[in-house]
Length: 63
Image (cartoon, rainbow, N blue to C red):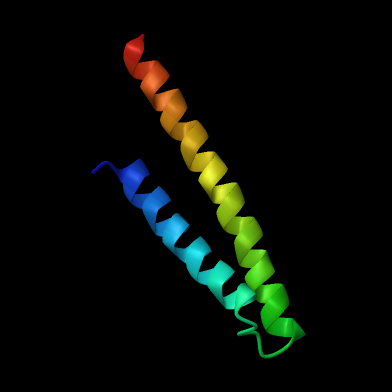
């Protein structure tokens, strides 16, 4: 397993955990809700960066 796949798997697992918490009303207060939504946004951005980096590295290897 390469680094990109490892990181993307970790991100996906955490996103699933957050989604399950949000859907099961496992939120104690608005502060926790905002914190989790911030994580959702951050992980989404990080996932995009990792995928773009992997794509660029694969393209660079082909050159």
